[in-house]
Image 1 (tube, rainbow, N blue to C red):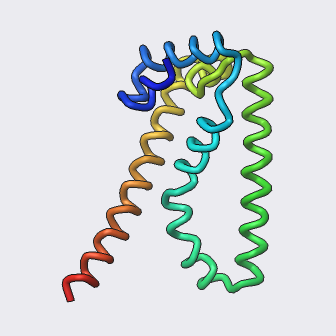
Image 2 (image 1 turned 120 degrees about the horizontal axis):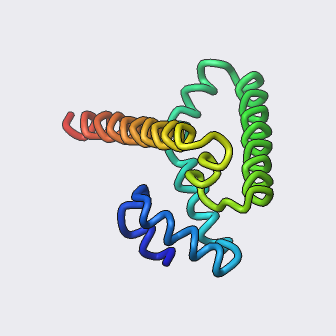
Image 3 (image 1 turned 60 degrees about the horizontal axis):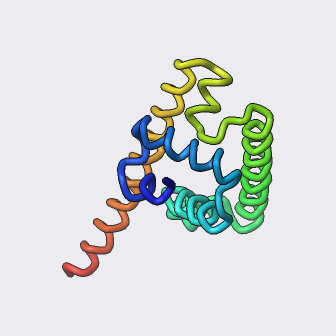
Length: 136
């Protein structure tokens, strides 16, 4: 079921199919699971870059850009949820195949890999900076 998806390799098709089947059977993902997924996605390169963005743009423009980004994020989340409801697809891969065919699913997989590489790079930069300060 869903527990196995989060403990094993998530991106394999077999596990995604099992997760989609579990969602179809249960009807919905739990609020807790959804919240953990959203928080873990947002704690990445964007969160680490936020202080720099505010210092570079100033507090006024920084706040305006943050609000605009939040509004765009909310709109895209709403659009994604509505698309899932309309198409009866409950994973990114299913939704992309439904909307754009197999090429769309491949593009989505590449975008996710790129996002993860960016998050890992940010963590490595922070760790490297922290270790350099400790070494002094």
